[in-house]
Image (cartoon, rainbow, N blue to C red; front, side):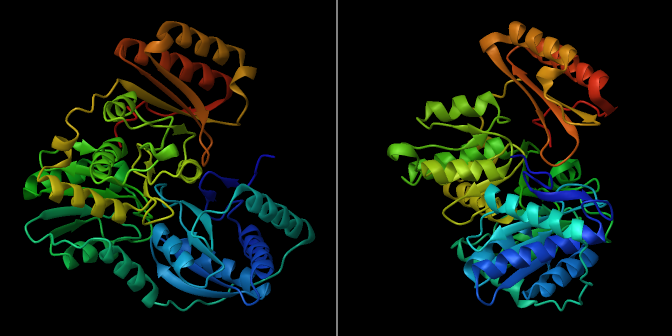
Length: 461
């Protein structure tokens, strides 16, 4: 059964509009509270926010709903998504909630929920929550917002954990960190400085509306320029909730999630720590990862199973086959020996660890990563309809498959968090990539489109 409220990364929408209107937010809190009371006798939930102006009000309404169900809330204030996941699984919290829309603009917000294990809720519990939310909305739900007092010690515990995973010093390294005016604006620079790095922090002045604005993991040019201007050894760009990281080398090369997976996989393989099914090394990625990554890993004897897009699905496959490393081209990378979700700061430490061990930068460590031409086109749509039910779209997809054959890949899917159709084509023949990505996108736009977005290579950030 399809979920209506929860996508691949929790519940997300425009703040103030359904499903982030006050009654629905309250219903989420009440329904989660009822679930929590079935799971624990005296449940407590940790709650955090990113830097969006809508975050505090949403948090107060969630806490009000939880209180109406008899559940206590500890408020972490501004904190990263992986920070909430870590604290949920290492304390007595029955669940963790982060109010964030990750890399989206400030107008959007979202609600991500973690179970006590630190993993995002399984589909079954999300279905149960949805049923409870809809029932509450039908009957009418009344629970006012409550005031929240920040527990400043919570993010300190998360900082201690991160530092404990890195028994090295960074005294000779100059690092630029772009915090996207988001949740890691204080914690990220503090972590690097604590480890001895000469740190230049940019986009660390949130005003409620500038989160992800021309900054961070989706807009790396300011970071690239800052790295070159400062003569830095590395640049890292986080997104608004710091669950992803994109890097820039000292030469100005952009290092995305595919490259991070390759360099960290090789490092773990050398140390005998890259596990997989039947004891064979494996790295889990998604259908969006470049064919070049798959073939580079294969040269080292590393299998790369693919999943649908979404770090939730990557993690599910990692757990199923016993893999310790997985991630997405977008910069979500999961180091399962340390964490239960993608973590941009943890990824930064692991990249620095590889650099120190090898004495080389990330672009040098991945110089043999041959990227196939890849084009991603986003089309904003009015509705999600099966592509096979749209005759013109189906014809365009068949034409692309006939032209590209086994020399590349075609992926047409809907976003799990927005009303977008995403068309990705990859092939050694760049002209075919351009021709057929535009053809399929145009057919979708004519059939169910709202506004066509500019095409961009999916290997850019």
